[in-house]
Length: 206
Image (cartoon, rainbow, N blue to C red; front, side, top):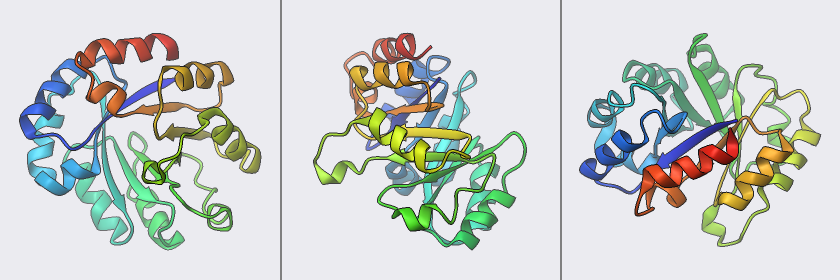
């Protein structure tokens, strides 16, 4: 089970410090949407180059211009890019076509109704992100959320989960054994000792 650490709402200096401390500890280092919007691919890619022992995800949340945005994101050093599940199936298909054998498309299913998910659950190599919307201000039961998705979409091979994941949720997800990637944000990136926090999650998930 892989640990993905999301870095959001940080300065470039703070982000650099986090990338250096998380390099090789997190399986995937996520440069969150706020970083992409605040600083752009050019500045973010310079920091991504520091993650020599982790994979890199840019959370670009593509909704249109799929081929262009994915081509650009991969050019600037991403191993993973995100497209919104609410995007047109045609856009998602273009993103998938732009993704080669060593790259990864992650489909963010935040607030996507089931009838839409059913139209896009056929991309064999895509990672489907079961993502609780933190703006709702409610707690989640991550394993239950993953189990429900897996039951409805048994042919999906790669599942990630995000949204308020703590150590308890991580432990339950590891025991459940369905999700491939567990995404943790502030519990690590805003911790006083981010590397230590990441290692605590890593120990649970390995």
